[in-house]
Amino acid sequence: MWCYNANEIQPGLGSQPSRRLLQPLSNVANIIQCDPTNSSSYNSLQAKLNKRFAQGLQFLASYTFGKSLDYAGSAASGGGAVGNAQSVTLFDQSRGPSGFDVKHRFVLSWVWALPFGEGHAFADGGFLKPVLENWQFSGIVTLSTGRPFTVFLNTGVNNGAPSWPDRIGDGKLDDPSPDLWFDITAFKAPTPNTYGTSGRGVLYGPGTQTVDVSLSRVFPIKGVRLQFRADAFNLFNTPQFGFPNANIGNASAGRITSTVGDNRSMQFALKLDW
Image (cartoon, rainbow, N blue to C red; front, side, top):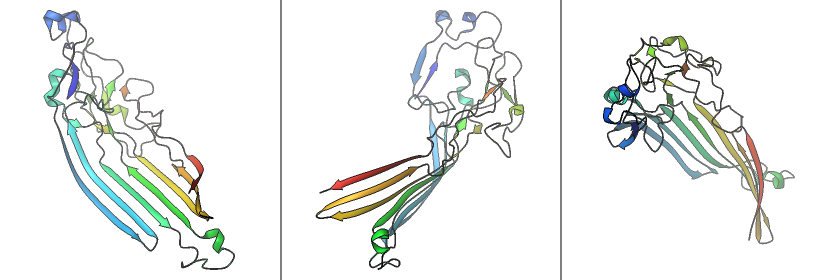
């Protein structure tokens, strides 16, 4: 399913109403139509390694190498930063990455009962035993490559009709940074009143790397259980950058000025079970 303006303006000379697709309704600027002509495909390689709880440790590691392609942004997701075809008349030529396409994704989760205290390798006795025993360390590590985005023109050249740039180079940089994420010189305005050659989702934004951890301990107290828990989200305070400004001709084109994830946060809790 995708939604589009069925009365889109076409490039050319003359007034905008004279260049709308539905001439009997030439004075109606927007006729939003949603239909199921969109189609998509997804292929992936998925691997998983699972260690069941034994000797105080369990973990699950999973990796996905995938590719999702479609012709337009879905009505439900909005297409991420990819969106629809350049024109409804170019739908058949608009196949490209889905807005949620992620090439590589790795997730590791674990629970580790730390080996301290009675019956364990360390602090089996002595004054450290009551301090170090019964602690549990768990966490989740998520590593993911970025999602695609489409490059646009800050100022169109098609007299009100959709206008994307021509792609004259790869656009990727060997060492991108938030100050310049892609090569803006790889895109230029096309000849007036012509559609640009750049496609949907031709470049990808920054990936994400997060580490969330938790340290907890249960204290048995006369028939009740007191649990202490300390959680840290985005432990290393890694910036999760958003998409760059992808409007060629804009003074900030190529720059990233936003983040899509939270900074490091921590919380502490006490829980009493009886």
